[in-house]
Length: 472
Image (cartoon, rainbow, N blue to C red; front, side, top):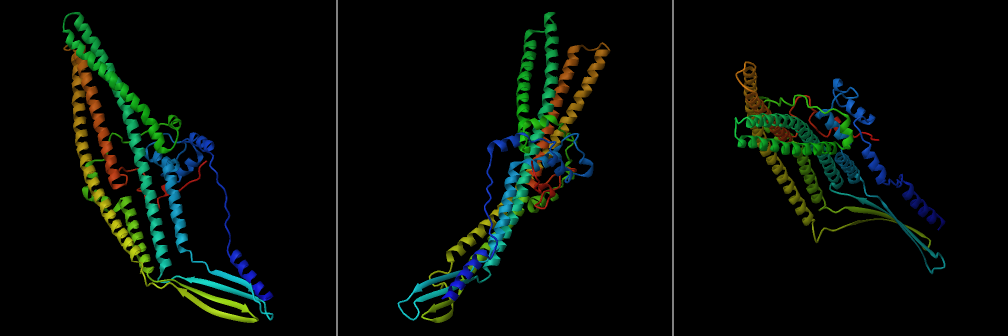
């Protein structure tokens, strides 16, 4: 009986100490400390500097940066934006799920000790060992499914990063456009104010009627209202840009924002429809993610089909009783008589069909979005060209009015009218440029890659721009 006790104790000890045991380590969240850290974020952070220098071209990695344009602000958002941190955590969870899927079932040790009324040997003991054996390659299908889901999580990270980049571009465009618009409206306000004064002088000497002055005053008042609205929108646009990056608005007040070649969006000839169509069909991030979702559904179906075949549990055992030592080798298996896993197989087939339909829907949406965005961008470029031509004509008329005034052939009212035409034409050109840049952003979102030279490289799960970095 001493030998039986020793075997039981040895088996339990081996089961408990056969592998390293992980321990729980608390990680409490301190809301006040995290809020203070958010408020302390700046664009001069040392960790951000290292993140940018490693990912920007050598000539753009100088610190401190003289100006912040879309590529630098995008990388700052990749460093700070909380949404990307959540997506990275999901990737880590998906990678851990691969480990879970590959885990083999643990063996089982069972034992019992009893007694007998027999005077010869009152002790009865038994020790059993169960070894589960998976059949039909189930473990391999589980691992394959988890790997495909992990790949999908990585493409989801890239897709989230593109969404962040699109938000940064949109809010930066809004901020810079509104800044120029406020300046243009201030100029137009001044010109219309001068017009009112000139017309009032004419009214005073009886050269014009009062309705003409009243009409100029109304237009001047409308500009004041429009200017106030634009200034209000500008005040809101800067916090929106800061939120897209993941920093407090105070961090933007310390830097110079710029957009090189803002006035020169890419020509339509540089964006051939065939290349745009190919990107929309094959290279969109959500399309690639949908491919791995479908691959995961394939592996899931294979696993459910494999589950038709029962697993086996081998069970060698040792028994001691009445002075006899007994050994036996047993096994157990579930007989698939009442069901052959038809329900889960049917569900897996339905999920695979759904994943295939979702892939086609994503492709179709990408094609439609790219075609519509390209058409809008080309139309916006035509509108911008017409607005530019109109501004040139207005500038020529203003120059002619100035020459006529210098020659004594015109008065200040005529020059003021020409200046007002230039201001209106400049505002129209700026609005057309804004629409062209918005249309270009929509086109980039449709193909999910930058279309302007010098921007960040197209995103993928292997992109260095998505590599997590340590933060203060």
